Image (cartoon, rainbow, N blue to C red; front, side, top):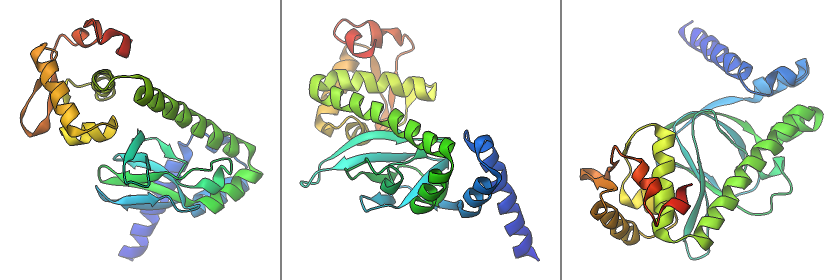
Length: 239
C-alpha cells in the first residue's frame, strides 16, 4: 500500500507538471495522454555525463539544478554553448526530434538535477501529430542557436578580458547576487578560456577595484556594479 501511494503521488506530481508546460493546453486529448504517459522523472548527479553525443537520446525538462551543453573537439577541448536551469528544456540531446541538427553536443550535470525526460523517438512521433509541440521544439532550438552564435562571436571577436566581463555581468543579473560562487576553473570552462588567463584577468580587475576575489574561488562584484559597465575598456563588451 505504501508503494502504491507513493506511485500515485508521483503520477499526480507529473500530471501537475505537465499542465504548466507552455504547449500543454494546445495538445489534443490523445497527445496529452501519450506525452504524459511517456514522461518519466529522472535525477542526475553533479558531474554526471547526461548525454555523450550519441544519436537520439531523450528530451530533458529541468525541474531543478543546472546542465551544461557543450561541444568537444577531437583533442579534448570543450566549448560551453550554454547552461540550462529550472524551467528550461534540453532539445539537442535528442537529435531525431530536429533532423536538421547534424553536429554532436555533450551535456553534463553541473549540479544535482531533478528532471523529467521523454525518449526522443516518442517526442518526435507526438510532434508529427501535434503541430504546436513541433513548433515548441523548433522555437526552443532557435533560441538556443541564437545563444550559440553569441558564444561563437565572443570567442572569435572578443578578447578574454571582455568575455570575462560579460560573463560576470550576466551571472550577476541571472542570480541577482553580487556573489558569484564559482571557481576560476569553472569560469574558464564557461567562457572557453584557460584558468591562468581568468586568474590573471581577475587580478587586473581587482587592481582596478572592479571585483574582489574571496576565498574558495568566490568572485564578489563591488556594490558599485556600474563600474563593470562604465569602465572604459569594458563598456563595449557589456552594453
